[in-house]
Image 1 (spheres, rainbow, N blue to C red):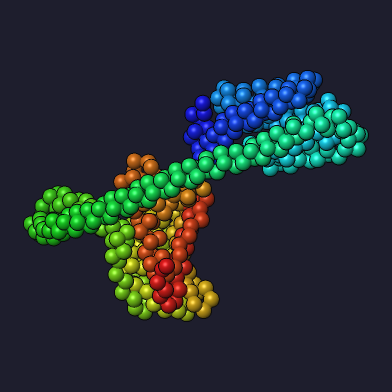
Image 2: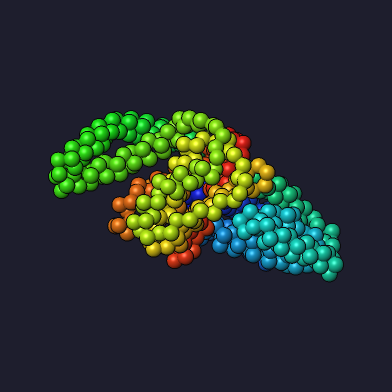
Length: 431
């Protein structure tokens, strides 16, 4: 009798179960009270109210099923009890009467199904009603007290049992929800371990395949260079140009394989760092020299902005050079007839910051959120997709972190981007 939408979540199912079982139990208790009232010979509006309350309680599970919510029937019974409990006292024309024993139950029901605020409001309303009724109504006369004695006894027992039943139902539902949560956590942990094993297998596969592919590619490149030289010496310029294009394509493939191998090594924690003293100015000038032909081909003004007296870094020169080559190369890829600036400066006594600034196409805020994710290319146009695998920036960030530093980016669409690498002068192992 609990609708599917309420069974979907632990919390809603708990409350729906409590309403279902609790309403049936309280209905039985109210009918017992009604029978006691009849046995006491009291046939007035209070008897009609008691039987009406029992009927309303019995309908709550049906209303919950039809509406798909425990809040509507919970609100209905709260409103009914807040109104009818004080009315019992008015019907008897005296205070206190047995109905006052039900006052403490109402805020509990209201708070459980409708929240703390409604529970507090219902408590304040009934507390105020008790004060008003006690002030305006007389105490029961001896004859009425005698007639109500048995009702008081039964009402006391019933309200005690009602409180115990609500607590029992809630605790049982809570324990079932807790068991379901534990089972879910076990399943999630198993899924996590399975995913980690699959990821490890993927990493090992990439390492193996990358290594096996590099061997024949290196052979192709070596023979290509020899063939290119022989063809050029024999005057066959056309064929030499074709061989050069084959070598360029092979170099591109080798670069992609090296990126796959790097990302697999990083994920496997198999990157070995060789820390040594590095002259930042010399390193950056070497990177600029390597990229200058690419920049010239795209009519890019490649400039340096190196602060004087840069401190030496204790870092892995090969990995840092890889990061800078990637950043400067990317800046040139996404800039045409513009400018790319590579700068460096000391940041305090213990760190150096290197930046690469371009006047290229820039990136949107949404693109910036994904820029360092593996296999992500922010520009998906066909001519851009041919330029790389989308691993360069992901590898760069991981390498910078392994070197104890951090990398950040700022960008404006149409106005270019700026990448900043901050590194400590002394190598610090990333946590």
